Image (tube, rainbow, N blue to C red; front, top):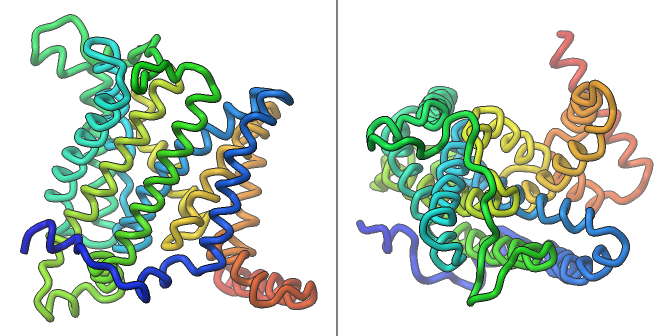
Length: 360
């Protein structure tokens, strides 16, 4: 069975309504309209907000890439920083040495992210659960060490490739059809368009026969293998698609940030990505996007306070206790039971459950 057969080409109208309900689709469309109208307002009020939201768009795309394999295939990857960083470094090297055209740089970042993910996935999918997570973490740290020590430069006999701990700085902006995207507003709309496009692609994949098999693998891997599916092949393809998206996010991040540093490849980047996905609500597609928005906003808002990580940790603890299914769970609870008394009772039940699990 080939990759084309795995991904599937026919999607029924019934299936397309399952992953995102009509109400959620309408909400996402409204959020998109607000995002389109937000930039001119932010340009007048304060461009900082446009910069912050662009940051959110890129990390929302990154979080969406993890949700595709974590939320739908049950593959907890602790190594997505490897694909994010590889895509970012590929974009930086192309911009510095070849071209700044987005039509070449971003596809190259996608390909590099996909290749790195395919290698890691092929070597890791035979493991399950925490063992899979540890393997992906180990491979990501391997890529981090390669970039940190600039091993490519040693192998090629040149002065620098990744430039070690100093990273690659002064990365210029992308061009698109001959137009410079260096202005904040241009990059804002470019990032928004790519995020919206990738959300549409992932939604279609999640609703396809391929996505249904991934969900079945998440629920009962042995049963899926018993009825004849090649589970490892599905996992590798899903991980490769996810890695391609992570590479694209890295390719977008480097021109926006003007630097490609080894911190992109570090395990803490993968950890932050998992926090975004869990806080938003994994397996919902829109939840991790909201989680990325929340985490980026909190980090930016609290960073002006001394020991801000303590306050950030408190916020995370509160959300985990009272909303174990993340922001998506809060939305679903409010939609089903909007009455304040019901919501307070749910919050009390969540606190009681947490105390029972911790203290008993």
